Length: 492
Image 1 (cartoon, rainbow, N blue to C red):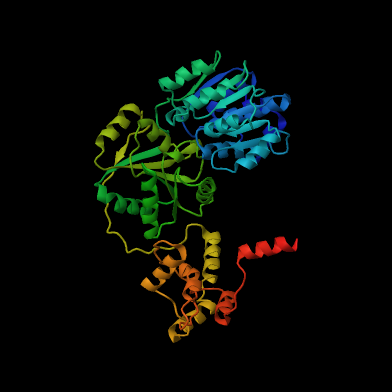
Image 2 (cartoon, helix red, strand yellow):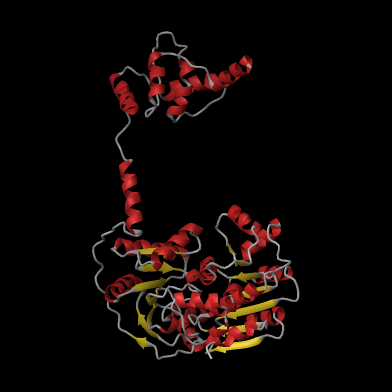
């Protein structure tokens, strides 16, 4: 029997709108136990539909229990945003509001969202701790906790934050733990957080995705960029390129742009709105190549990724499994290629831990000469071009005031004090030695220099406004800001 038939009708309609008719194995195995209110410890390969495996029964339980709430914890902002969007798709039109609470977003907007008392909070651990400290989030009536990509949260050092969050939740509670791998730390956490959990395991937690053709190529470090350009030239479809560091991702993206590739970089140093924008450009295929660190290796669901390229090998075999899992999702066929450049030990560790679903193919390097640079500012399509046109429209010549000031300087009608003369004058004014470097300070020294009876001059700042220019040329004096304030007080 199709497990979807046990869901409320509004969820079945939502699945039909998305063209989802048949549940995946992890959905078939997990939904029934979650609907029954049992704690679940589920492990499955990436790209097998784990997100809907807990969102669908969670929505069904909240729909029949108006007093129930839930908290969903995710390791990265991108994955949390994806879960939040999936929740809105399946609950469209129902009274099941959700709030997205992640770092980098406007915290005042989050205050407002939390005051509206959402039924579901999708969050990253760090921002939840922030709200708990501010006392803007109350979890005392949240009886359901979902931990998604738990192994990644442990890798990122969120264990203490997770324990603090769990201590703020009531007991007993309904806890669901989903993970792609099951190291000893996750097992220990499951014993700590879950009560008599049902074990759901689909496939091997250390095997790679079945429908991904995996290849390696051995190159020198200096040959990596030419080889990458060759792979981008000869392969069709969207490409996700992984680097080890944030700086490396940014540098490689700039190099690829220099050679005419439409690409962007995604890493943890980007502001949240930029990270969201970069991912959106990649999803709608405005940008073909995305250069990313491992922040994008977990939970990012972009169905049209055809190739994953490990420009730098990952630090751990588990990260390799998650990286190549970005392609070949939901039964599609994908391709991955890893560059091995003097890091044979890392590749041996990957081979020892990962159970390859298919033999890894070694290909010969093809180093084409680097093409001539042809940088084109094309990363964001129409929106980017419109913005560039706006910037170009504002590039004009010097203002009339600046041109007039230059004329006066060249003709000798304006005397601009310089050097020791100005420095001595300022020293006399302030009573201590000073260093004069700017037109601004020259204007302030003008009043002191006017004490010389035979020296007629006007001091101007190049680029001054028309009003300032008229004031200086006419010789009129205007009250200072302090004098204007005192004058207003007298009038009162």
